[in-house]
Image 1 (cartoon, rainbow, N blue to C red):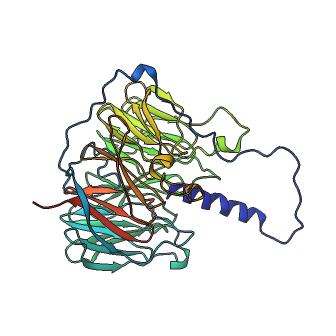
Image 2: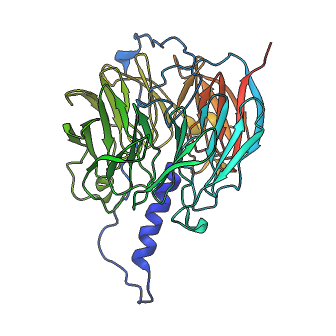
Length: 443
């Protein structure tokens, strides 16, 4: 979804620049790349004696926001050993060429909620996929102008819907009536984060707005530097230990006090080069992940960094370019790079334990011409397996200890939205607007 959005963003920029009927002028001078040099990773010899340690599996009953939790660290959700396709249901019209889903579904109390391309909330029974209800939301944008449908989050009594035009709805889960409505007045491409009665929303204009979930009142805002060339997508803020981490398309990182918005520390992922256009695409699209007192961030410009959450001290930096959120578990960082490498990075030092080529591994049965332009979801650890889906219709599971392929299935539908898990069931949202559920058979 994110690479697709990047191509769209750059295409729109080029089209805008070329608009008009003036005679074409051939520009002189060297042609320069608009994309950073692709990530090259190899397993480090020093890590081969290290044992990959995974946390114990935990029961994740609900998946109420992007990343599952406010810190974006679900760790190791419990899933059965032998899962099968339980059901598949449509939520509406498939994506058009210029559209992409910018957030995964959410699950609460055995109901799956998602937004379709018509700005409609659709609720499905998680047992069998039966449609329970739907609710049409009004947006500042015409339906033909919607690039990303929006995102949902649930606080237990209300469902929060944030549409791409900046519309914010709080809807009572029981009555389906609107509790309150706000409009940011600027576009949003990220999912909201909910924590301790507050909603954190990062807009496309590099502005973090924090609202009271009870009444929609604005509590505080924070603004970063503006950026002309960005990826059409934004990271969701991460919240833990009284700190909210927000990243902007300018490459800025801020640690802010959740109550006041006061700055605790800040940093930047800005490149030292001023020549390459690509060096100015510093966008942090992957959401930050907080585990304990450590903060992990990766950006499109080629930096994977581990910080001290409370002080901002950098522990290490690795040259890795990615626009998908890494998965942190135990002593490992599982990450999918910009050029389709799946790697296990040692959390303590940033060294690589193992790395595999996803295109070669997942798409080996496709003809060579069918393997071009592969896109992959973020890695997803559940039930002692590492899951990755692709726009070619494959879902693959890998051994998190070694990277060895365990199993792959062919769904024949493009999947570019990150999967989720709740109550032992894994859910995939396809670009055809279908929800696919995998779970272990009942005994």
